[in-house]
Amino acid sequence: MGIKNKDLLGLSSLTPDEIHLILETSESFKEVSGRQIKKVPALRGKTVVNLFFEPSTRTRTSFELAAKRLSADVINFSPSTSSIVKGETLLDTARNIESMQADIIVLRHSSPGAAETLSKGVRSSVINAGDGWHEHPTQALLDLFTIKERKKEIQGLTVAIVGDIAHSRVARSNIYALTKLGASVRVIAPPTMIPLHLDRLGVKIFSSLEEGLEGVDVIIMLRLQLERLGRALLPSIREYARLYCLTTTQLQRAKPDVMVMHPGPLNRGVEIAPDIADSQSAVILDQVANGVAVRMGLMYLLSGTGHE
Ligand code: CP
Image 1 (cartoon, protein in one colour):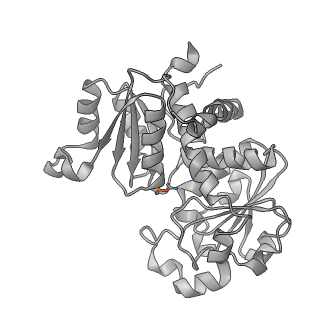
Image 2: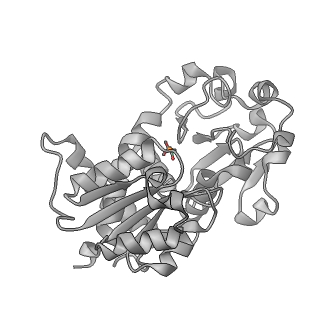
C-alpha cells in the first residue's frame, strides 16, 4: 500500500490508512536523527526544492534536514532574491525549477489553494508547507506522531484546540486528521475566531477555556495570528490573554497526564504562560524533533521509493 496522490496538499483528502502509513513510515526514520552519522541513502539522486514565500523557522529547517538526512540534493529557493521580484509568476517559477529535474517542491504561500494550483501545473510532487489559513498538513502529521508517541493510541482521546481557529491552518489540518483517526475534538475560542459551519467538521465548540479543558487528554494551543488578524476580532491582546492564555490554574481542569502542544512560534504570555511552555507537560520541542522524522517518512513515500 502507498499514498494515492503524487502530492500532499492537505489532510482532508487522505484516508485514515494513508495517515497511519505516513506515521508508521516516519517511525522507522526517527532513529536516523539519533545516529552519529545522520544519513540514509533513501533519496539519493533526488532533488528537493524548498520554495517559501512566507517566513518559517521550524518547517523550512525541518524539510531541509529531512531531505539531507535522506541524501537528497536540496535547493532553498528564496523568492526575495529571485526573478519573482521582476514579476515572474509562481507557476512559471516552479516550471523552470522543475525543468532542472526537481522531484519534490515544498511550498509555503500566503494564498489558500496555492499548493493545489501548483500541483496541477507541474509533474513534481508538491508538498503544502502551509497555504494561508487553509492547511498545514505536515504540522498536523507531526502533531499526530507526537501524540501517538506519548499516548500510544489516538482513537478515544479528547483533544482541545485553543485559540484563533479562524486563521489557523494548523487547526484545520488537525481537525481533519484527529477526527478521521477517532479522537474527540473540542475547539475553544472567542466566537469571532470560530469560522462559520465549523460544527459540520464534527467538533464541539466552546467559548470558555475553563469548560472546554475539563478532562481533556491533549491541548493544542494556537498562536494568535497577528499578521492575519483583523483588529475588529479582538478587543485587545491583553483581554484575549486574560480569557484564553493557558496558565497553571487553567491546566488543572485537564487530566493529570495532559500533554500541552504548540506549533510555534510562541507568543509567551499571550496564548501560553511561559512556565507552562517550559513545563514537563509541554512537548513543544518534541514536536519540532518529530517534524524531521515525519517529513523524512512523507518524502520517502512521495518519492515513489516507498512503492518499490
Ligand atoms: N509550526 C510552524 O509552521 O513554524 P514555522 O512557521 O516556524 O515554520
